[in-house]
Image (cartoon, rainbow, N blue to C red; front, side, top):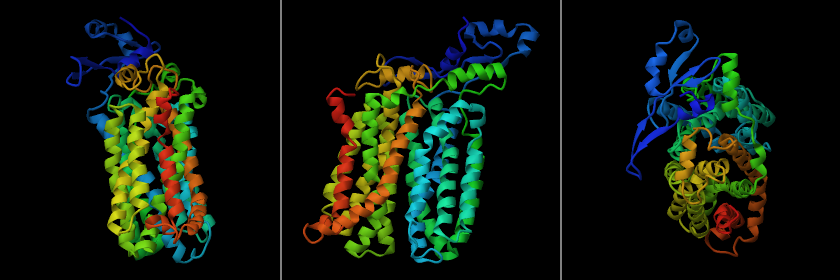
Length: 507
């Protein structure tokens, strides 16, 4: 039986399942795909007959078999490479607080304004330009296959050039803008290809990959603090850029699509109709996505504030020393590693709004009860762990949002992922609709970027307003950070609005 190229590629991602329920056993299906002027897939009982075809026909066909999804050496090597790249690309801007503290008190930047803008630029650009970068990767898949290499070169060049900076403006251009652009180009292929490698374990795969940022948030500040205090910022940036380049460039070999990209013109044209199909960006204005995006952006405006102010809060409120103050951030990041992986497991089994509710309840309770009423340093440390576990795992719910938006309503079973997973297996990077899941991710990242950029100037206003509560409220609320704590708690609460909207029938 001969079927179309799209069906052939889709069948390459299927798993044959025997039995039913959670105890069913799975066997990988290896199918042979022939790419030529016309692409066909041959059933197993016809393979031997067709293989004995004419020499001329065999010469015009290239035979290969697709690796399995959700497991196997290739899938796990891909995920391991993405994990390390996640650490190196996102871990550095999340550890920018170490540089901010150094630049603030050391020449030639001591006393300069806009130092915080450096870190905001790097992280904000990586969020905000995601739709553009991913769109280009989809339109030009052959060029995008190796995009991590130029992206890493640009990113590391920005770090190296920043070591020659003499003004904050130079740092904003190099350590901020150049780093952000290079980082997004290097990292975006991880998101584009992960949908091909993982279907039923997609949430777990995302959770493992994103936990790399949390792990980097534990290791990088300690290493960078040592390097800065020992060698200064110029040598530190040069050493770091060289180290990142040496570690990450070889990983580009493993960050590749599961479905091979044809080299012939006819094959590429036909292949692009599957991989880079015309983007259906109408989902951006659909009610479900707008509701998810609204909650996502609001949550982001408060999410980054504890990471910025917890060390300062520990010093000013409890008189903590340098390491006890930094320990607040380390605990948040360690807990986020666990939170991301656990949420990844949950999102593969529960409805996305249920997972968002878990994150929201844990984060909101921790902020209002533990941070707001903290009277001792151990109590503050407890808040850091709770916040990392629940707030740090919020973005690990995104695979569920991607699944919801990209699945046609006829296949979407509210509260049950079985039908959705089955639809996903019919094509590993699509859920049976023209909506590309990676583009859903791209616009979710855009919304989070807006919240990230807005949180910078907003946080300064919140800290100034906190003086009105000082001495009039108890515990953390009367510490001078009371308004900021309340704002962070309210945004965390509103971030869970999708659960309520589902109950109202809007999702």
